[in-house]
Image 1 (cartoon, rainbow, N blue to C red):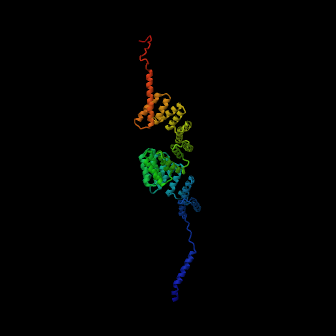
Image 2 (cartoon, rainbow, N blue to C red):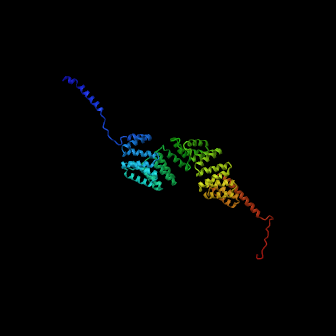
Image 3 (cartoon, rainbow, N blue to C red):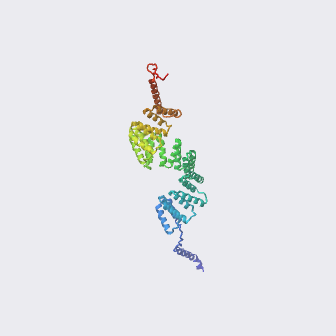
Length: 452
């Protein structure tokens, strides 16, 4: 009995050890969990390891066709790859597995919206709104986008406003601000952009678009500040680099502007606007050959754009090549027939080519499109004078003098207007003196037989 007591602890310990070793030899029973590897799928996806994620997704789908999360992630990846229809099929499969998951319905609606099925997207978003337990800003934002695509701007604006009330995300405010700009509602658009920035201070899109708004209303200083804020967050943000360089270019800081354009060229080397601005910077530095080369590249990249063609016309006129200028200015007229500037420049080119009749027609068209533009008025008067239509030219000068009494114009325009006015007065005086009798007495007119 004593031996049993002495050896009791050892015997018990050895039994426990033996039992533990015996248990280790047994495997835990496999529990078939369909979504047991969702964590791994999620980790690969958020790390942008799409190849590994797709491989794992296919393994999971082989085990079970009713794998909701695998189909959901596969749909997201296929959409990123541009396979919208295939992604829609995946989201539909996930919806069939779990029709109460609002995310499946929202992704179906988003795919339909991208595919251009706007009415079906509205139906899908409406269904998502019904099954949503709480108001979801993404649903209202998607509805707003769909209505905008259907050109129902008021409905789109209404849903964007609902979306802004539910989130601080920048997207609804940006969309709302763009709608305000379409209606020229500048204060409301500025408020929406400011709200987007308040909720997302690091948003480069909100800062850039607000800067463009300030640039549109002529507040260059605030625009420059917003572009600087955007570049502080993203130094290679092309949307901010281009307008900032444009402001510098307007202040004749051509070298600084060109350095900015050089940075932008690394991201958007095929941008027509970029090469157009580079060309005009070089033109400002009087490097005409390089300016023509850059502007021709801008015209090649976008031959239907009026701006590069007009600028090429200006450079060719400056370098004394009116025939080449006329070719590109005709292209500019075709691109924007309602823009008076190409007609004005074309008229100047035709005048230098001694085609006064064509120059008159071109400037008459420019005058019809912009009847109060001082530059067009003075050039129109000069052409009419060259065509010996002094009476019509005098009427143009009268309208120009009325405008100059109210608005400050360029000194060259005012000097030319005074020069023409003096010329017309001198010609009128000479004409009156030529009509007076030279001997100082009136010649008697012979009366006919029936006159008294």
